[in-house]
Amino acid sequence: MGLEGQHLTGEGLKGVGQAHSSARLLSLRVNGGTHSLDIAPETPLLFVLRNDLALNGPKYGCGLGECGACTVLIDGVAARSCCIPVGIVGEREITTLEGLGTPERPHPVQAAFIAEQGAQCGYCLNGMIMTVAALLRRDPHPAEAAIAQALRYNLCRCGAHVEIMRAAVRAAAAAA
Image (tube, rainbow, N blue to C red):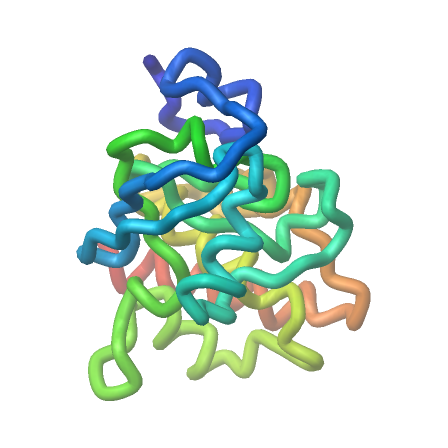
């Protein structure tokens, strides 16, 4: 399935698995580890990450996959976890903000956002960072227009867009 360069939704993962209404044992690969969970397959991936695995990087924003606060990487592609049923993720690798880097060794995108102070309230930050990380994975040398295009559906209500763009450009320069 050619998924590079797009955001995944539940529609983009159809055919990976079947969702059923009763709980069952599911295995998830998250941040390099495997987790077995007894959970209903139609449960949104975001709820599993936050409630069952205590990963608070992805945020609940709109619940419709439109704001980007819940963005994670699935096999390196930016995905809106609020609208993806956990049962269709299958054996794909899920990476959350916590899985990108550590406080001692932040991922280059995280380091760029820190250096540029690319946040005000920080609620959108997860989605911005994960989207830029996915972009740099598929295009290590994006032009500023490509960065703006990649971030166009990540909403920031605080108005930190200038700092966010500076951070994304810095991360791209570091990747080069």
